Image (cartoon, rainbow, N blue to C red; front, side, top):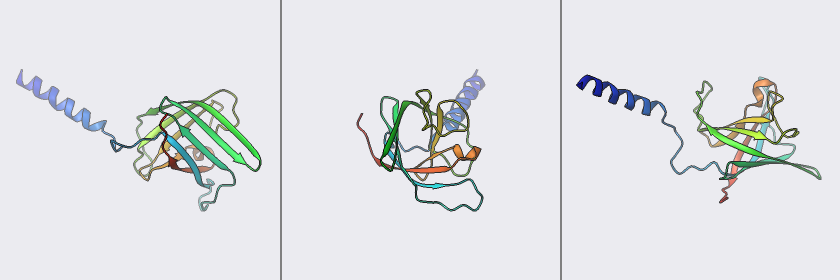
Length: 150
């Protein structure tokens, strides 16, 4: 019986260690993230200043707004998002994964499929990055500019 209790305790402690996250306890992803630089998927490509202003605003209620300002035009898209735990094989340690689901038929969706979704990562450098580069899109990096109380 002692061995059973010991094995259960050991299993529980190992499991709890395996699901720990590196997200600081006081870190909040909610707020506005502004596009600060882009890069094409070419091997030797340099980062560039964005040609448009683009931002994501994540609210506390699980909704978001994506806005793009280019010249005199403005486009916005809305939807819901979820925070996810996923295994990661890329460079560095991601803090958070966000899956965004847009209202259908929106031209602001930047992804590898026809689905109205985007997958974003908050890196250990506190940058919000897209995963569109995996399918010949641009790498887009966003920095948090303001928190939100919503």
